[in-house]
Length: 250
Ligand code: 13P
Image (cartoon, rainbow, N blue to C red; front, side, top):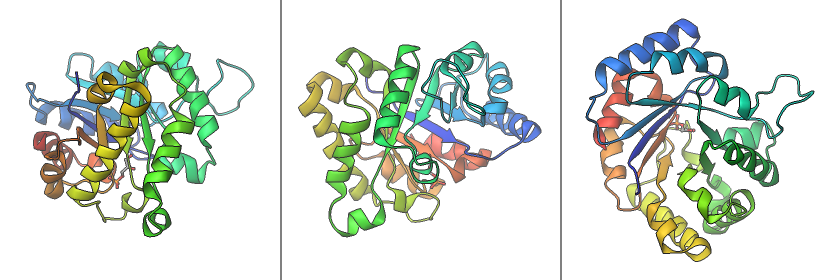
């Protein structure tokens, strides 16, 4: 069943105390009967306390990254087993910041996806074109290639553990949002691409989130589009009232 999902990617924001404060606000303000699956992704160091804090709530916890290896001499890295051992079952992979700033290639992301799925984790798979790709009308090709090279190595059975997040790079942190029509056009293309490769059931059941300057003011219109199943929220996820308003827009 296709789920409505609102996920907050906190990126490198919020220390331990600020994490606790924001979680307390979210627990108090997100309706217990919300129609959305709500996910938050604090930084690695605050994941264990976030899981504990959210134990008896309807808010789930995701990591922002995972290393592809099981263990080993990889100074500064975190494994899937470590995440699972503190109760984290969801991981964001392929984010444009990891692709651009940390040189993550499609091949590396595919590797990480494989590791996460082997550990029975849910993957929020991010992808999206840069401004130059859209200007040169190459955005559909770029998106199709990112899906093919980073994700389409998975087996049909793995799709129940995958959430797609289309995040056009030109809309991330810029205040410039894709119009609801642009989002719908691309989400429809993405679903069609999944359909071509994996069949109708998987295409209809996968949730496709939109990310890029989603705010309380534009969330409702974007979420109202038939192929938009929710959002991956950056800046607006750092303020409880904004994030709750976006959750309520579902
Ligand atoms: P903004 O909502 O700040 O544009 O960030 C989106 C994003 O990158 C979520 O992963």
